[in-house]
Image 1 (tube, rainbow, N blue to C red):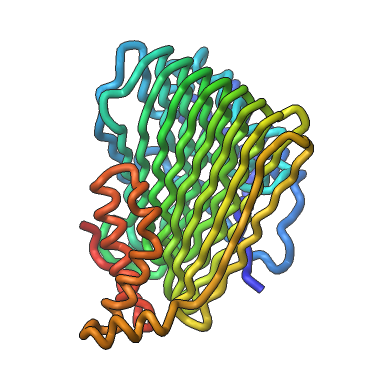
Image 2 (cartoon, rainbow, N blue to C red):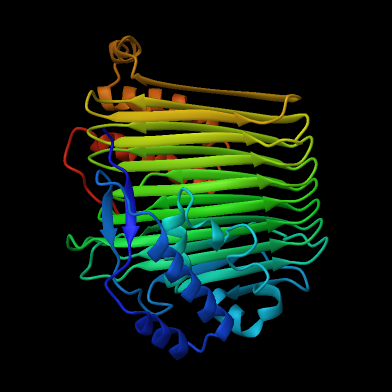
Length: 423
């Protein structure tokens, strides 16, 4: 049985968080959100006995980690502001959406709700991105979050990204989470990130999420996007780092003609663990969602992948498709893929599929008879398997980096893991 991973709060009093919030100068409504999240966490079901629970210390102060932005110059009327500052300086824009729009605190009893309550209670960093109606960013916006690789005791990093695109606005955003390239001790740390996205009528967002954290880091992710009429959302996922990575991401296709596409890959070796829960909920007519995932696992790496296409009553002529394929490079690697559909409407088109299999030894043998060493032959087969996903990378730079990371992973399979320095 593959173990699931969850978060637990530190042993602290509400007064501790209240004191920190007031020291940061947060307005009363933010403190109220934190208090509500704390209460919901206390009321949420405890994790099962088989789950691995990672305790959290109090988060560090904002800015303790290296977070950098580069890319597009945003149009007039747009905002790109650190979230701790935005809640103070832009309350009229932030308050209607923060943990109220796509991510709802009232849903803390649902799958991933325990992590949502933790995130809303303890978040200490983040960004607020806002584009007015019709605005288009000139180039992709990139954010890089670097986390030290086990250098001493680290407090958790809890980030929240809030994106609001008004009607007709367009943006491409890439977020990378990775180590700083320096080796350190064995002390584990937690990087928990939530993404809350609101796309108004006709708005378009391409979001790339690249996770390549140090080998002693645990990654948690919780995201939700709300799509209104004719809105479009494209999500690219790459999960390659960390000791464990847990991700819940869902799209609510509320408006007529809304579209959501997800393409993702995961590559693991050693004893890495991945848990991916992806959901598309169709509420509007003529909506479309597509989910394509491919993974490669070696050594004792494991993955749980659950995809859900939910079509509610009234979502006539909705289309929902999903496909997950996993390639195993060793007999001890394991993957559980669980695609599912829940349909409450007759006039729809939906399908799902999943496959898990070992690498083709005959194909390996053929390449090796042509003079290729086994690692090189394995790399060629893996790259061929992942090619359809790699070409969907949000940029040529990201695609090049992912190819390098995959090659590094294959080199490490069956041997001692090493933390190569980031390029």
